[in-house]
Length: 140
Image 1 (tube, rainbow, N blue to C red):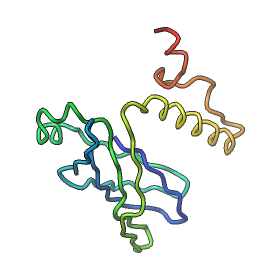
Image 2: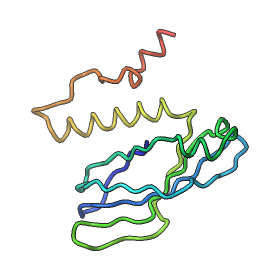
Image 3: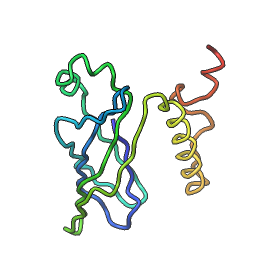
Image 4: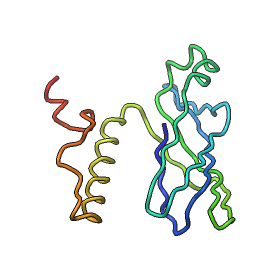
């Protein structure tokens, strides 16, 4: 699962991503293939790329259990006006150990931004995803 955002000024119609898996030994292992999103993403909005990991897990076999993170690189972006950007400039790394805290920060930022832009239609106080609420840690 890869969340991505359009921080530019044009509407994105297609985005190609190259993924690399990071293992517990510090090695970077390229994914089997590139992943393509054909979502229309307007400026200031975001999209979600979802693909099952089964093919990757099958390919890596027992090594799959050592995967500790993911590096995501946008390599090609096509815009609604017919123009295209190519290059390995946009890259981000995500580690499994940081997942919950990263998602909480993302959720908080998303809610603040939405409420700033929509003062008459704010997101309700609590998230629908219990995982994103810090109180879940206190129950353990």
